[in-house]
Amino acid sequence: MLKQFFNKGILEAGCDEAGRGCLAGPVIAAAVIFPEGFEHSLLDDSKKLSHTQRNKLRHIIEQNALTWSVGMANNQEIDDINILNASFLAMHRAISNLKVKAERLIIDGNRFNPYKDVPYDCIVKGDGKYQSIAAASILAKTHRDTLMEKLDSEYPNYHWKQNKGYPTKLHRKGIQDYGLSPYHRRSFKLLEKQLQLF
View 1: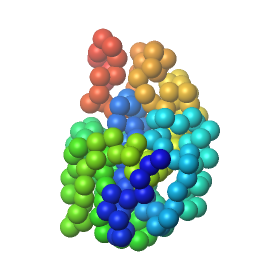
View 2: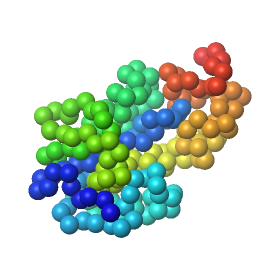
View 3: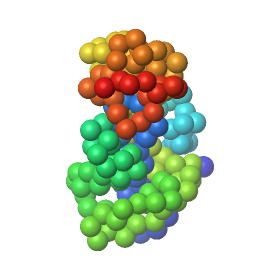
């Protein structure tokens, strides 16, 4: 069972992101503040859940959170400032969109760029330890998956509906056969043997 809070008695937002290892699309982050007393037995790190479980929990989280938000940094921003900084930028955007101001942040991972004057704690593998970070991981993943499925209808040659932009063989074959889409991250190693793509 995940813990409810890292810092009890304050408005604590859990933050996580999805899409750092993808070749295409944005990195999307989420921030979630739960009311005291919220629990759900299925809630866990998004990577441990099935597609169906994640989508079921997405609705539960969005209905029961005190406030939640997602933010993104697009592929051009990723290329400009690197994926780590773009992940922090997406988190900052998610935090800034919360309808209730967080008094403290708990961040999945071991690094973070401070957001304004809000104190924070970095927690390695926090998405498997704390409810709000697990919920943020689920919202980030499901919102990003939905977006990549929409982009797949625009650019079907890369099979994003199945791979969500991650570096699968079919995705890389699409890049090799059809070149790059406007959503590809040009600063990433897009092919096993990097060719001149642009």
